[in-house]
Length: 109
Image 1 (spheres, rainbow, N blue to C red):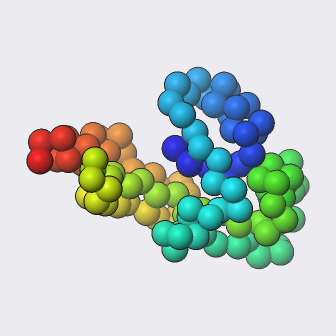
Image 2 (spheres, one colour):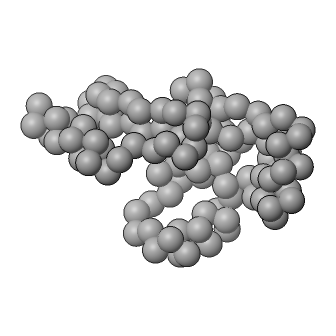
């Protein structure tokens, strides 16, 4: 998993969600930008986020208010991207079954 949140925010979230896999910090959304998956929140949404106690500039250590589009990539051992699912609607995420199916295709090939 890759996140734009700083290490302290990542650790808190991982502990709260009981995650057991590594989470990497995507500083200033550099990885998301390289895949064309970064966007900047407009000023009105920034205020909404802040009203919920979610100040991305503080959490991410970056005043740009950029976020990545939620995405899942399956990359084989040679570095070839074998599957991509990305959706700007953060409420629609790849289902675990589709992720497992994509992984099985890579392992089987």
